[in-house]
Length: 116
Image (cartoon, rainbow, N blue to C red; front, side, top):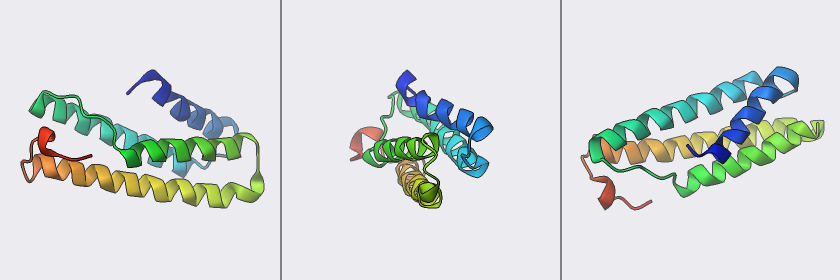
């Protein structure tokens, strides 16, 4: 994980502690990122290649950044929409990483044969 990728996570932790960000959303984000990091380490060990994030993962980080802005600016009218928007993208990107992992570990497709 690159340093700039950690900023939304740090902001989410601060907003969950001192702001209005739902703790459930923070837990979902941290769990997803932890699982992605652990699977990434397994891929490095198996394939000897550092995996890169896919397009859905990049979109999800940007969506989450927008959601954080909504919470930082205290745009209460958008809280529920922002929450579900983030959850939907977290689920979609998690599913895409799951499919990617299954191809490598279950179907034994090498990482060099996968299309991102």
